[in-house]
Image (tube, rainbow, N blue to C red):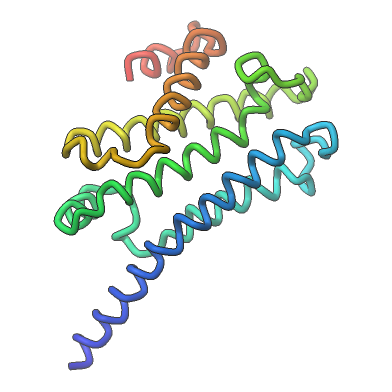
Length: 193
């Protein structure tokens, strides 16, 4: 009986987490949007006490907070969510997170997003790191979308997913076509993936 109660409580916590997490990710996405729209008022993003650093930390904490394994996007959680017809919600949860990160990191691709270039040349390493992280988040978003699509179109029914697909493709193509140094040893692998 004790085991049954603890399993029930863990399941209840996971379900509650699954229902609350999307709202938190939408709030983080809107905060990222607001930040990018008011860059002229923001501190330099490479400073540890900047709003950018705070938002970045909040996104990382949100992702780390997906504690129950059933909220991670893994084969086990895919099958669990597939059985309960919640795979679309799980895909949306993860795509919203990756899209929020890409949205915050738009500052690293000012040409693509028609933003003012606010990262000076002396912060080139910071800029390159953001660009690379943005590429990997866009790639992860594409992987989540492809995995959900492979299980059936009904799991892609949310109206935000086409926008996420577009954003993901746009960031990956821009990175591969305009930003990546093709002389790097890892460049070929990135292009092939």
